[in-house]
Image (cartoon, rainbow, N blue to C red; front, side, top):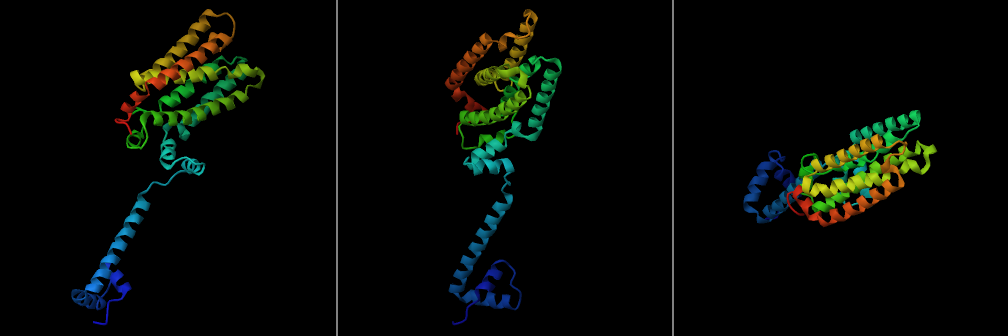
Length: 271
């Protein structure tokens, strides 16, 4: 046998696109020609593989601008995806934080007192971190469960991302209060202390109750300090209060490291 079906006709045959009478000739020839049947098998496999690759590319989610920027600066693909999916890095949360900070800065400029700003600024990173993990608060929890990341490492990745965004916004708001000098930065250590304490307590109390308890304690402390102090500088923002905040942040950080394995239960299993 010297005649064989053309490769293009075999490709069309494998895809069901070969029209008569070439279809009839190919059918008759393939019955008797093992060589053309082997070529047809190879062509069919390559076509199926191509369609599978195309389906995978079409089904793959398109990375957003933030995720592409993270990958460009060297962040691993799966880590960039987890960071981009962090709920509090969305525009809605960031917009709410900006609105709160703008109102507190305007209040400080109109009254000459930064108490409201100093009271709110430490709560924003605490709330942001609390909303970034755990099955009750994280809408991307299922994706985090199957990610190749240890539970504590995932928590730290998102915490650093949220703190970077939150502290940067609070820092920009501080620049709008230039006449206060270093006093306008008195929120920084309390913010770190509240966030560290909230994370450490979350290992036992859960990602909802622990931040709520820490935030409530902070508000109660400010209300009590305002009631018992005659001067305008509340105790948490004095030198002594800053020292206590630094000590709380250090102790909570150490406790968080000791209980790090407990955060695997938020994922369901260790990765």
